[in-house]
Image (cartoon, rainbow, N blue to C red; front, side, top):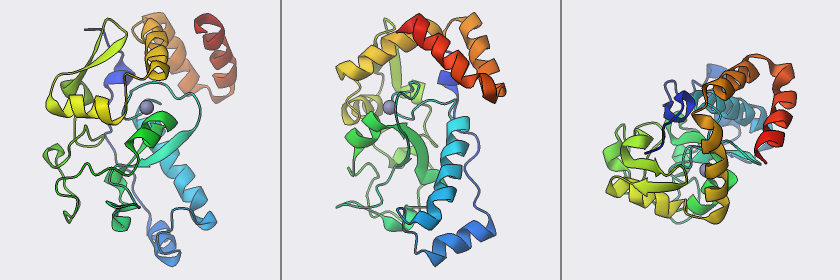
Length: 209
Ligand SMILES: [Zn+2]
C-alpha cells in the first residue's frame, strides 16, 4: 500500500455553517441551485470544502485538474433526487468533474426516501465524504491503482470509475509527490501564500508533466 500524505488522509472536520441571512436567501430563491443570486453562496461553500478536503476531490482524492464542483451526495434532481437536501451542509463536498459526472444522479442512500438526512455512513452505499473514512474502504496499491478493501470501497471505485485511464494517469503523477516531504512543504507554503500559488503551480507542472 502506498504511503499517503496528510492531506490525502484529511477528513472533513467542519461542515459548512449557513448564517441566518444565507438561510433566508435560500428560502427567498426557493433553494434553486442555479439561481444567480445564490452563486456567491455556492462559491463560499466551494471554498470552505476545498479547504476542509486539502484541495482534493471527495471520491478520487486527487488534486483538481479543471472545474472544482460542489457535489450533492444525494442528488438534488433526477429519479432519486431529493431537492430538500440541496443546501444541506452534510450533503455537500467538492468533487472533480470526472467523479461528479460519473456519480451522476444515482441513488447511494439506503433507502433513498430516508428522512431526515442520515448521520452515519451505514446508510450510504459508497464512501460518504462526511461520514466515512475513505482509506478504511479503499487503498492505493503500487502508487497506481485503487483497490476496494470493503464492499463500499469497491462500489465507490465502480461508481466513480476510478480505473478510468484519465484518473489513473493523474493518480500516478500525484503519487510521485504526495509522499515527498519537501514537496508537501512547498504545497503548504502555497496554501499560506496566495500570491505564490500560480508560480508554484507552474513549477509543479514543469516538474511532473
Ligand atoms: Zn475525483
